[in-house]
Image 1 (cartoon, helix red, strand yellow):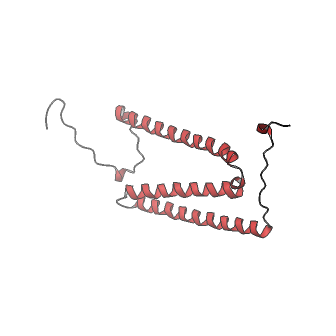
Image 2 (spheres, one colour):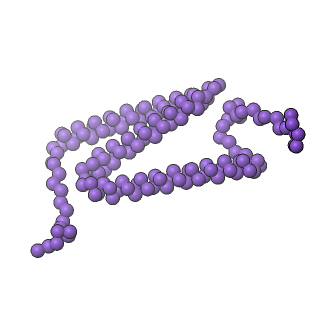
Length: 151
């Protein structure tokens, strides 16, 4: 008798005929295409807003957030349908998803740390003043008061 912990894990999947499989692939491809077109439209809107005389930072940030959400939806559908992960057992899915989430956290931590370093360097060493904002959108510099006196 074999120990239950070492039994082979087998999952009986439903067999789809070719027509149902092709329909599923076609539906997913159309969905991914629509999401891509929406992302491109949002990107063009961001570009147009940014080139305008008075860019709305809140609207640009909202559009960028929507692009991130749509990109994650696309990644989910690609992994679920085209890589067949949606048909696997839960433990197999967690084996792939948990390290991926840790990797995403790793990227976010490095981006946050790099931004913090840039801000501190700009604050304490004016020689390295960096910006990604176009000159016409930068705030005007305030006149400095004399040292040790009031204006």
